[in-house]
Amino acid sequence: MKGKVIDVTLDTLVGEVTNMKNDGQRLVTFSTYQEGENKIGILYHFDKDLEPTHLRLVADMDKPIPSVSGVFFSAMLVENEIRDQWDVKFDGLVLDFNRSLFLDPEVIQVPLVSNVKIDPKK
Amino acid sequence: MATTIIPFGPQHPVLPEPIHLTLKLEDEIVIEAIPALGYVHRGLEKLADIRDYHQMIYVVERVCGICSMIHAVCYSQGIEELMEIEIPKRAEMLRVIWSELHRMHSHLLWLGLFADAFGFEALFMQFWKIRERIMDINEATTGSRVIVSVNVIGGVRADLSPDQIRWILSEIDGVEKDVSALQDTIMNDYSVKHRTVGIGVLTKEQAYELGAAGPMLRGSGVAQDMRMLGYGGYSEIDFEPIVETAGDCWARSTVRFREVLQSIDLVRQAISKLPEGDLAVKVKGNPPEGEIYTRVEQPRGECVYYIRANGTKHLDRLRIRTPTFANIPPMLTVLPGCELADVPVIVLSIDPCISCTER
Image (cartoon, rainbow over all chains, first blue to last red; front, side, top):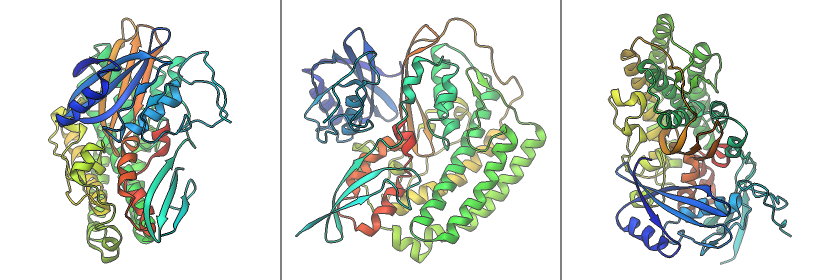
């Protein structure tokens, strides 16, 4: 993959994202993928002078991930999208649509995780 | 002061596609805007589970009709890089030609809608009349006006004959003349400037930090355009991004207007450098394996594809980040402080493509 990839953990994520911001990096977006049975991989894509850099986080799907929307406001939308598509929660999300950014309240299927359903919202 | 809640959209005269904004107002001034999406979410990324990597070209073309060609280019070049396929130079240059035609008709569509947003219907009709000539070129060269579907993994499936090339050059001469005739109106007309100058200002620092893309970013003075990466045929073409510095609706509109004229130049350059040769190479070997992050410049800005492949014909993951998705946080940032009457113009100034955004 083009660009440098830096591995981060739940503990170092926000600090690394803050470092990227201080370095003048622009947050482009995140990409997600399933890693193993119950883990999600998130790539945080940054750009400076057209040179990409990526932070890679691999985390359990059933544990909250620290939100970086306090560092980059634009992360708010993509974190809500991940919440919709993977049913992963984010701690400290500045605007939380509570799994209704794209999905209707009655949707119980988790779109990008096979055979996982959740309770419909009341 | 008492606050009022005004629901804006999802159906609104300026919105070609549905998005809802909850506007909190004090008197006539917006103090907060909260978006609601999800009206046209189709789950297209999930189709990678059941469509093979060749078929996915037809899926990504349908993420957005207006940018269909450029979605297909982004996806194809990602797969081609994963499979180490070098496509013919003629195919690269043909992709540039159809991509720039798409940019022209997208911007002309938007310029018309923008004029309509502030009530200038004659200007709206003029831009759309010009746009028809580009749609005619698409139809004559690919068989379709909007979703041209010429990309395949390994190249393109359509060619341009010498007669078609002469006709395209003559048509874009006409487009250039007609568009140039509207320059003074869209940039300098009193009523146009009154509705756009100083409205919805996004500073250079805000645009960068909020991750704005395309004319939204360049209209705020950031000289960034993914065509500068030189992907495909752009590596052989002279290109400088169009930049305006005011950061307001006027600047975003002017960037798009100037990009129409620039795209005409890029089509001419691509045609002048169009080599003889094959249209596509045969795809051999195993299906793609690995992960790739690839970017192109769509009419609305930077489009990002992340592809993760596992060596089977179905991709593990296809993630698409469209430019409107990137431009929603900047829009939410510039709306507070504006007058209610300016909301439609500001919303339209990001060139919102909601079906792109929601996929």
